Image (cartoon, rainbow, N blue to C red; front, side, top):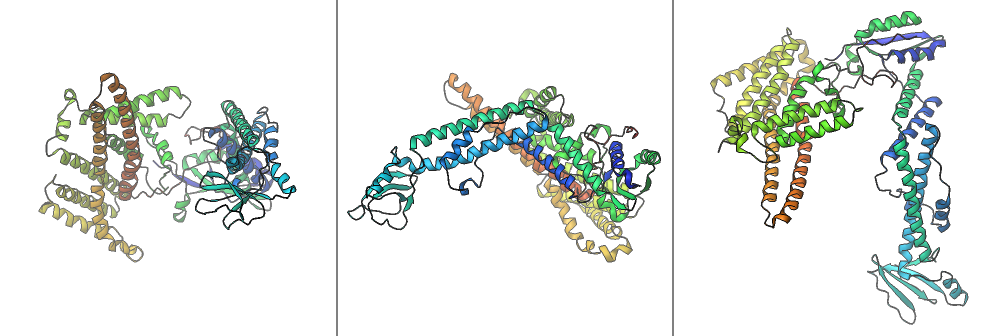
Length: 624
């Protein structure tokens, strides 16, 4: 269910402004209507929060290769001594309180990135002078002093520069599509030649400096890895997030003379608790139901039935939330998503593997939330059941586990049609549940008759889709009569007479909406197509591995590699199919018929992270 909400306005004296926010946070039941805050205190708190997040990002991404910053190639001209200073600079130690450690982590990362940028430029310098080899870098100046001008240059291989008496050139070879050379004397180089300044140091010294820079980067990275093992920044991030919310709430309080007030939303069931706090702290308080124009501003607090609470984690992972004035579809979403998951994976062996990995992970990660493990356990068990019914185990179909259902799916000439019939049946049931739910919710409003009409349209389209692929007879006179009666119900009851002026355009869209029902039913055939593709891929990899023509001692390791790679890739593709197809059928086809827009946002009361992150029905301790 979606928990009913009340709008709450709290008034207090200005002297108790800070204490009022503290008590609201202790209560932990009020979703505040924040206003933009740009006070120095809030900016400082947000800055500290961002710093901690930055430190956590650094420690979590140490496995990624270090790349020079985008601006490194456009920085000031390279100075060879700069990298020597950076390498020699002492490093901070990651010790002390949490804030000191955070500053040390960020400083270490800054040093590491600075050396990386300098190394990037030094390597470019090395590449530019490598064709000339090792030489005394003071020699060009000596030659110039003796009256022999010397200029190092390079040009593209597409440009032809021919040495002669007027252009005494010594070529030093081609590197990275450039020809490198030295011009002796006063000759003029052709246009397109790039004059290279004298190198900052001998090539061997620059290469040695590159090695030292790489070693320094590796040493700093090692220190950061050790810091990542010893520092847990998540509690500090939560604390600072709470602090930012607290300051934002404090800044959102409106003031008029000696009175301050703030508004927000609370679960209706918490009204007595808030009233008691108001009496204790001498607040003025106004509690009312949401007005019609406010429904889009009301947060959504989902409370699914006891066995379906794990759906919170799935909705959070998908980033979806029904609006406050919509319905909690956790139960049908969970039930049908489990079926779709099983059909898209399509293999009992994969289901067994997912279940074992889930149970092992749940055992190892005892402090992690349980909801994802519960969901994966149910989904994998559903997949095992489907694999048993379809007799599919890692792409094999053992005769010993054959059953009437698998025989129906593999019936010569009819198996694919039977599978499509099952998909259409799931579709018509799924969409009918949505429309029937609407009809029950609207009763005794006459609009419920329009929803009954839509059920008739959906079933007519079910028989139409089945007849198109040859698995059902074409709709007869009876079904055509049902379609006609259904359309009359929709036309007659979808709108009230007073709504015709404002929403009459919906009648013009009715033909398209009726036709789209056929597309919605056909859309469920994706379960057959994707599931069949998964099974066929598994079968082909099995045949490829078993069919290797080589000695047994060589065949076994090759078989294992092919099977591991093939089934691993197939399982990954099945996971992608679930994210695309199982989610779509619930959040698009079903939701369109149910009227769920997923435009809501979660109820997030002002509270301390020390308490449960999800709202709990248990009484909150009375504020003291």
